[in-house]
Image (cartoon, rainbow over all chains, first blue to last red):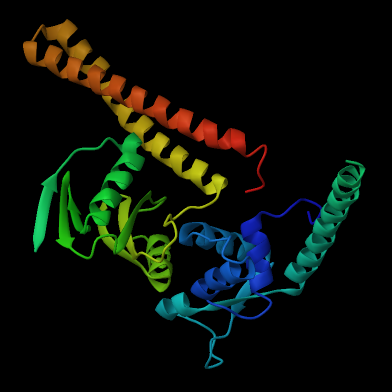
Length: 114
Length: 181
């Protein structure tokens, strides 16, 4: 369900995959997007990629030569987000916006009262 | 120059084993191979490598494991040793922490995987304990009493290990009610 909160790892994976990337590229992008805070461990990333592929939120992208990855070469394959994944991601951004706005609303007000 | 050290760690203390291997790596001895309780190290720059361990869900030659290891390789992680389904990997230090599993869900799943393995070994030993005890009641032979005691002792040890793992998994699982990952 899109209404449930995504884990930070899943959120950054989906965000990274708005362009096709290999596993290592996802790790680098998540780290740079978060200013070095989010460091996806390789095992965790591997599990999340399999899980997201099974759900159809991401898919294998053709490699640089435009060929579909096959057999042993499959390890070099890149991933990209699917329309379903993008829909989930948009829902999550909206939800995070709500969390953020409410935080400012309450804490901002309390801080102003002090 | 290479150096070999013999040392025994129980499966439920794999985090201590990992910590020890990282201490060695920090001193400039990076693990290059593993045999049963036998670690081989090579001299490197102090802190050049970080080490991690994992119990895989499948055998090492299973296609799933092969695919996983290739994925790790792609991210700069090198397999240096294995024992049954356990893998030892190393990565060049890049300033930050090195772990294979960074989220609580995978950590709990990993601990439960080890717990099941330890439980299985414990169960087999318990069976062996009772079986040999039964033999002894029939034939009153010394060797059966001995085998029965060994079986029960190992089953007890495995129970201790399983409890340790269970506590570790429970502590992490409880945090999951608070944190998203």
